[in-house]
Amino acid sequence: MSNLELSDQELQRRETLTKLREYGIDPYPAALYPVTDKAKQIKEKYEEDKQVVIAGRLMRRKIQGKASFGDLQDDTGRIQVYFNRDEICPGEDKSLYNDVFKKLLDLGDFIGIKGKVFKTQVGEISIKVEEFTMLSKSLRPLPLPKTDADGKVHDAFTDPELRYRQRYVDLVVNPHVKDIFVKRSKLYTAMRNFFNDAGYMEVETPILQPIPGGAAARPFVTHHNALDIPLYMRIANELYLKRLIVGGFDGVYEFSKNFRNEGMDRTHNPEFTAMEIYVAYKDYNWMMEFTENLLEHCAVAVNGSSKTTFNGQEIDFKAPYARVTMRDSILEFTGFDINGKSEDELRAACKDLGIDVDETMGKGKLIDEIFGEKCEGNYIQPTFITDYPKEMSPLCKSHRDNPELTERFELMVCGKEIANSYSELNDPIDQRERFEEQVRLAEKGDDEATEMIDQDFLRALEYGMPPAAGLGIGMDRLIMYLTDNPAIQEVLFFPQMKPEKFGAKKGPELKEDEQLIFDLLAKEQTMDLNVLKEKAGLSNKKWDKGVKGLTKNGLAKVTKDTNGLTIEMIG
Image (cartoon, rainbow, N blue to C red; front, top):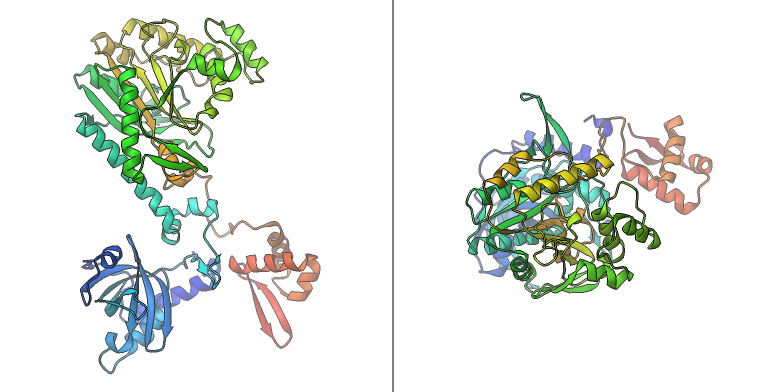
């Protein structure tokens, strides 16, 4: 990066970097630092005069002559640290405090501290520093929020675009964000423990697949050069897990990264995590009870209670959950009975209900549209929607009491589906016919229908698969509900974003008034501030915001001399 692209603060930090090296201090040492303590544990288990060794970022510093206070932040939180010049520099040479600490350390730097625990006069647990070590120099200033005397927060790092792109900064300056991902980890641990205690085994299946199967979705396509064949990023792992049931495992599960080449919004990311589990000799009725007990267990593990709040509404994951058939749900919210209806009748009903449909949609897709538009959003508390029409479930066993239906449920929470389950289809002849129907729908124009038949999976079924129940849970959506986050981007460390362009010609994105001032200034490079203001023709408020935006982004600077105020471009 050219110096012309750096802000004043970044240039200053590079200067202190050089001075540290001139002082004989390696700003990026390779040696192990012997950390023995964490901020949270020091405060929870306070012990006067305990000798501790801790490391983290310097997040606050208040210099008061020979003594200074600061905050050190590690992965458990913050703790106050007290620097005393004579404690750090017991001899005649005070430069380690006067020069290194006061002048060459910056907020955001990683340092190691050795010292003793004590309480200040106001009772705050702190560490009296006896020795500090530079561990890593921060060359960019953190966007640290400030709280004024009235408790108002200024300069908070809240812009979603920046937060998602720079999650590493978000995690440092917004501690509550870290809590979301701690809870996410707890969810995975709780779910694993539940399955392991039941005797089921965690497995791994391929992410690159020769045939995209197990779900109705558009895949990402890549190419294997050595084999000269197309491969597909996994849209689901279902067919591989069922192969393992054929192979003799009674229960297998996997947390799988799946990829679907579809749109992005507040509840969809092209890369997402699903959990799928298959258990031999069970059916969907057993799986409903298993699911509600699983989710109650997970909610308690994550939040300490089966109850959580999402979007201002209290959600209770305590078992049991309500059960409503697909037919009854549609009948309740539309007055239309889907039972026995033809494709043409369903299409006409959609039009009567104001639902957009097209000629590529078969019966299953039409019913799905009715339910999605008119019913799904009404289920806030966990509710099982059961007994789906056969056309909607190509991998599901026919209902034992009605061959037009399947033994399937979806769990609805907060108006969205978070789990899907079948009594798994294990009749290879029936399965082949379902696959062939999917191919016909694909030829008709349904871009989510399966275009290829997985012949190897059919061969596996022909060897015999025991009756089984399967369950898939969208982990990202579940943790959204358990942490009260309406956007999936909030629960993914690194959500998919539009590509960010780097390079000398690419500067920060400017607001309209900033761009106007920048374009006028670019013609002259340096201008009298009042002349530029007059040319811009902006109100005082817009002018002030525009100039502040340019200076904050390091694109311009204002200087004062005997002739008045001058503004000039940087770089």
